[in-house]
Length: 51
Image (tube, rainbow, N blue to C red; front, side, top):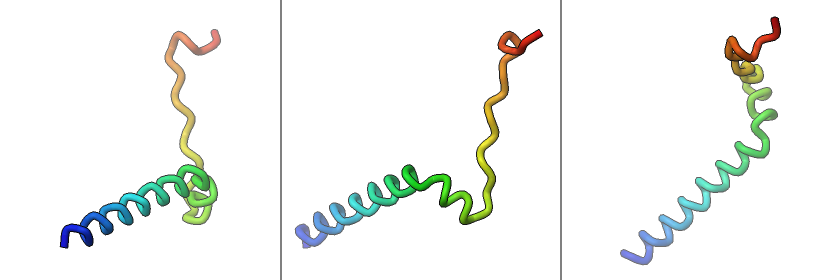
């Protein structure tokens, strides 16, 4: 029983890492496939704006 649990944990950890890698590499294509736009640019602080 214990060996099966360890194998399950290793396979699950691998799948989690693989999913994180895929989402990091193909983030733009995944967002486009679901019709989600690009994230908004961060707002500038008042001191960063040109006069």
